Image 1 (cartoon, rainbow, N blue to C red):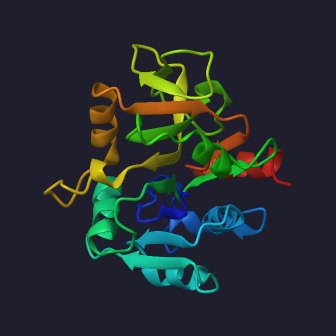
Image 2 (cartoon, rainbow, N blue to C red; image 1 turned 90 degrees about the vertical axis):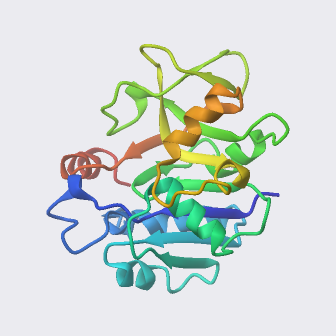
Image 3 (tube, helix red, strand yellow; image 1 turned 135 degrees about the vertical axis):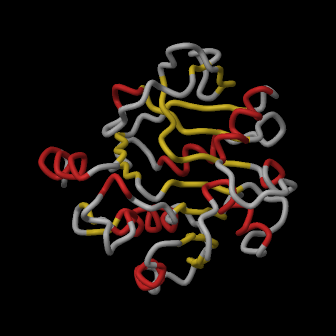
Length: 235
């Protein structure tokens, strides 16, 4: 049973200025609740008992936001470590049980669990014997706030999860939810690095898998995205 998670909340939030001048981006509110609290509550609904949140800018505000959750621990990073470095730092500081997979979630995403609980779904698809990472994907045109060129394609389209491949014009975008084995990062000797490096290495090894989630996903990356969300999607 996977019951450990990390929420990445140590970004600079430059694209959300001026809202993020004094507030970390995961504390931006939608539906009268912060992005961070929305994620934490979804994890608790899925029976998670060890939730780690990293913080860098205004860490006292992250700590205050999570104060009422017994299952949440905040790790304050004195220097920016990026996603990979932040995960490795939490592992090295013994915030997780050893050799168990971890659910990772970007702190600036939001989704509605209309069809099922997306966290439960990704856990149900996890297979440690063939996967090092499992990514939650959406078609890029269906992912609110996503403006990139796509991240991956599915090797096959007839199964609930399958190996990923990277083509010239990928159809799918990574949502910001994944499961990862600790072995993927724990022997890395540098402090500052992005998980993207490890994702691509897992791809080369044939150990990167993904699935397309049926729920509605939102990347709240800019003030414009936030305004559009509140006008069209708030409940």
